[in-house]
Length: 402
Image (tube, rainbow, N blue to C red; front, side, top):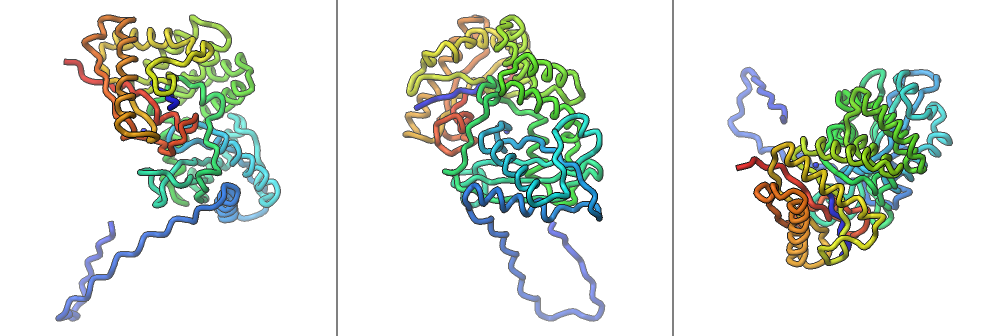
C-alpha cells in the first residue's frame, strides 16, 4: 500500500390568548423533515447545476451595469489544496459566465482588482457520504459555491450539487502535491467557513476579508510555481509574507519550495524551520514522507527523499528549541485489513521517532509514537493515491512535558 505521511432555537413563542383555554392539549406537531440532499449527478452536470443556480439567483444592484467578478481559486474542503477538479470547475465557470451571464465581467484575482470591491467567486469540493456528511465511506463529492460582494460585505448567492465520486479527479496540483507540511491554518479555515457555513444575506467572515489581498498574491505565487517560474513565485510569496494576513501555511510552504527548487539549500532549510515553527503553534502538524508500500523504509527516489534528512534535523531542532513534547501518530487509508494498517501506522510513527532521536538524542524523553490506522481518515475515499494522501499521514501533536 502506498503511504504518504504528512508531518481540521427553535423559537419558543409564549402566546397568551385571553379567555381561550382549551381543555384538551393539541397533539404535538411532527418536526419538519430535513431537506433531501440534491441527487448525485455526473461531474459536468453537477458543476453546471450549481453554477446556474449561483449566477441566475445572484442578488445584484438593479440595472444593466457590468459587475466585476474575481475568482478566488476553489479548494478541497478538507485539506485546502487546489486540485485537478477545482481547476476544471473554474474553467467551466469562466466558460459559463462568458456565454450565459454577460452582466458579469471576469477580471484577474489581483490586489488592483480587489481595490474596486468586486464580487468574489469562491468554492469548495469535498468527499461526502450519501447523507452528505463526512463520516463513513465517501460516495460522492459535495460542490459548494458562493458569491461574496465586497461592497456590501455579504453573501449574495449560493449554489450546491453532488457529483459522482468516480468522475472527480481530486489529484492535487503541483504546488499542493509538493507542499511538505499540512497543519490547521486560520486562512484556509476562514475560506472554508465562508463557503460552507453561509447563506444569502450573511455577512462575510471577517478573517476571510482581512486576508483576501494576501490571498491574491499567494494565488499568483502558486501559478508561477506551477509553471516552474520559481524566482517569480518566490517574489510573490515573500511579498505576501510581509502583507497583512500573509502569515499563512501556504506562504511558508511556498517560500520553502521555491528556495529548494532554486537550489538555495541554506535558505530552504531556514524556510522549512520557520514552516515547522509556524505549524507547531497550531499544536498539530503533519509532514509528508513517502514510504515504500507495506514498508517502514522511504521510497528509493532521491528526487523525493533528498530533503528528508534536513526536514528531520529542522523538526528536531525546533522541538528542542521550543521545549516541547510530541506524540507522533501514524494514520492510514481504509484500504486493507484494519489490524494490518494499525500495526503499519504505528511502525512508521516509530521509525520517524527513531530518526528524530538519532538527530537529537535529547528528544528521547520527549517523544512517544502511536498508530491509529484508518480510524481518523479525513478524505476517506480509499483511493490510495495523491488525492487522499492526508489519510496516510503522521501527525505531530504537541503535548505537555512531564
